[in-house]
Length: 136
Image (tube, rainbow, N blue to C red; front, side, top):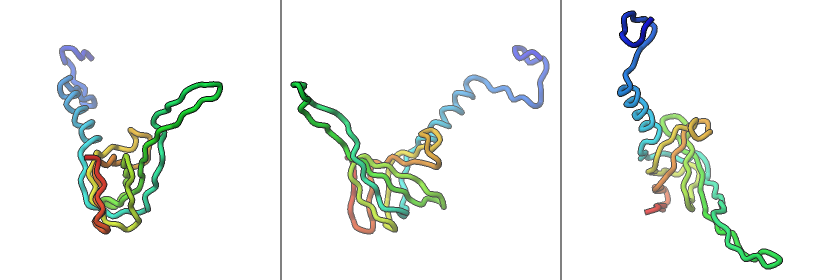
């Protein structure tokens, strides 16, 4: 079979043009990282982690200095019958059964090495307590 002039067409093989392939890949990437805004219910309490971000020190026989750090909050929500992990870069206090409105980017978990889906939140509104956590 010759692919160049399509003299024979195999019914089991679908030939796509480069433009169509590129368009499909762009749509898949767009679906994997789409904006996310939804009202949901928290399934667990948030866990707050301290992540080291930089080190400043002066070596003088012994190193004098300190480690700067940032906080990250992780919790999960129930969305469309599935559990979704939410990551917020900062302090975000959430209790189980709280009603939340979350804005952020939606990522497919397989791309990040996580089973399920992940939302990296920019803004979390706790509708139960009235607290708002936002980066802006």
